[in-house]
Length: 251
Image (cartoon, rainbow, N blue to C red; front, side, top):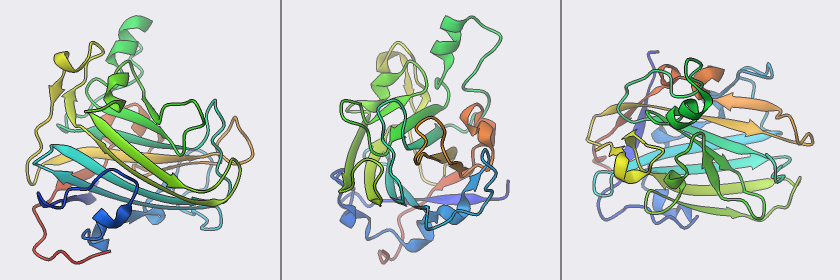
């Protein structure tokens, strides 16, 4: 509470091309950058002490009323990149576009089939592999709305030059579509959220950092500072859709 992050508005002629090249983000001021100092490990006991010898994270978020898309810049360095087929490093993003809050996952008062259909309906949880192992899709949605990770609802591009269990920098650029309601039946049964200047919505992310152990991550570094951001949208920080900046200077 009491924290408000900003979402950069891209001018109509400066909308990023999702190609893994961050040059489109040069116009975004540093004041929009959210680095590892904002993240807390709430599972493994590391608190706010992210070690730059182990992990470096930098995120920027943008939007465009022209495309009605959210754009993400994700830059991270890891001393051990783990992208084993079963699990591996993950960038988990949760979006509550209409700021309705509430439980979006783990409904224990219904049967399993209904619970699966309700997951990510009112707030969407994306698990993005960083990077995906060979043969895997780039991400999955925690629910039955796997259509959300396909075009035209999302796009993505990775850039990296490391191998499994090696150190190095990863660059990920992607866009997603905000939904007030995302149905297991598909987009025709869903409600897209129309973004407007000065809107405030709920958004959080977590970096699941696996190293040598393929079954247990070393940290659950999240912006919410609450592990249960993966269950309830009440715990998502506030983000504001900003007007176009008067000056286009930044890095």
